[in-house]
Length: 115
Length: 116
Image (cartoon, rainbow over all chains, first blue to last red; front, side):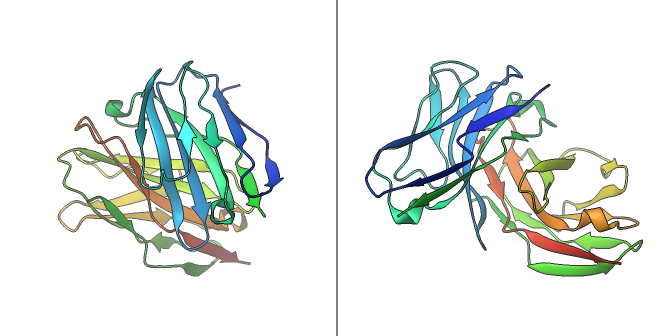
């Protein structure tokens, strides 16, 4: 089954404690990205990756890191989480975006609370 | 700068009636794609429909159609014969194509409630 898998689904952590949210896709997609969803703001792109070792900033990259060492994995790293990073996070993947109708496949989401 | 605007935070529609969800966009990319996604209360994001900026015809997928008016920079979603299961948050999104800009931009969403 084609899917994007995020872990964990729910996470409560304390300010400053480094954490990683994993994301893996089994569709051999080139393009992967991370979003955060906040009430009234919709989804905002944090980082995206066009392929292995190629990453770029989205609209809200501050406080986040990513890496793309393998095509299937795109972890999101919060080196020093703060309460304003409490949010619902989505990972998504799609075919090479220049190919038109390549919709994004989303993971189930990770609800992060930083206290 | 790219921007997506959804001006309807919430809408109600009677079951079996049609409803239009508004989306306007702004971009300087000559080529772009427009998407609609559905987010039910369970939280997952479901792709509904896609429209390319150079597509001559409006996209349709079952009960979903996209009313694309390029000159007005609008890409409204039309849901025909609404069902109770259509109650959800709906997001309009845009992405540049082939211009080096591969960001996805989402709107703030419209929450649709279908009434029995």
